Length: 92
Image (cartoon, rainbow, N blue to C red; front, top):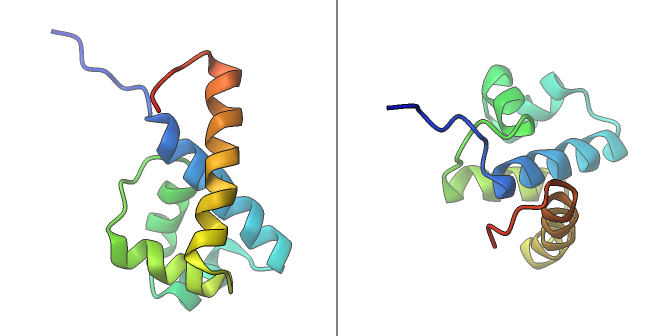
């Protein structure tokens, strides 16, 4: 039986948004991971859409970006919609 290796679009969109917001703030991935108290290699997996995060890690990331969760998730919704329209997926 073949294993589905496609990354869920919500994880990819989350990672893209984290990367965009991190770069906007001027953080390197390593410095940002330190601020979030998350391992740098784990943060790399987050940004590549390879990690399904716990709510506490999401909160750490959003707080480090100095955003309200509602603002972050509003941006995530737009990023996710753009991701799905580009791939033709309908996961939402």
